[in-house]
Length: 108
Image (cartoon, rainbow, N blue to C red):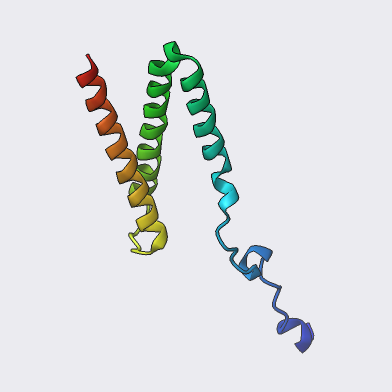
């Protein structure tokens, strides 16, 4: 082998050299559309309101469990923005689920 081949380093994978993108609000579009649809249906059909509230609580429960599982699966806890975002989302959704369940119990 020549000396030129020994010094050859393959280029890094493309995902390493990419610059990080800024967060985009377009990721929130499905959530906004779902909330609008649930609200419009709830206003239009009073008899479906209870069912839609149960759907909202299920979405809140998923929003609580999924980030909590992601946090528990982390190999080491880095207290960075991603960690606090996941923790905050889990706690806010947990508060929503607790308040919703209390409201359901009080409504009986």
